[in-house]
Image 1 (cartoon, helix red, strand yellow):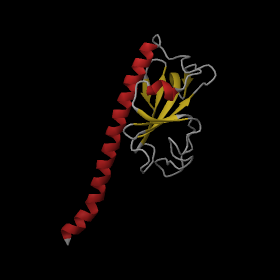
Image 2 (cartoon, helix red, strand yellow):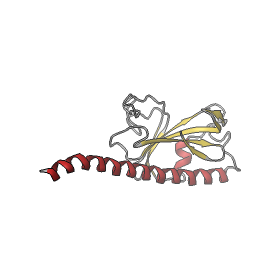
Image 3 (cartoon, helix red, strand yellow):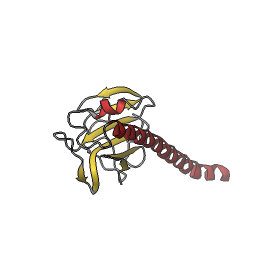
Image 4 (tube, rainbow, N blue to C red):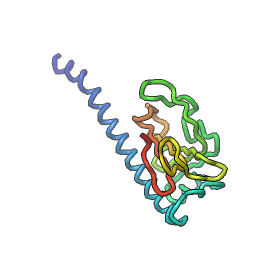
Length: 167
């Protein structure tokens, strides 16, 4: 009975820690794939993405370098991303981040993009990040839960010459 009680108390915590490690490892893999794709895109476009996304769709450009199985136009809630307001913050509150176009990768990862300046494609200092062109949001386990930022949902900035994880 004592062993059963101890197991009942410890097993859920161990499962949660294992799941968190799996989510973080999945994010590192997706981030690495995007970093490599971004480097190739920068090299293919004269060394900078400043102005590049004006008139270009991020989904189309990134799918040249990534394995995409589905592309979604704006708005992509419910097709390449969770319905508006259903993703959660760590404190349990609803997340209402705005997203535009998106893709689903061959491994099931959901990806959506937010271009900061649709008109010119300019990369500027926004959110304290220099040369910021766009933001990428990813759900590393696709449609499965928990759909919480910092657990299975992550984001990073696309800069004119790099990508940087969102803090």
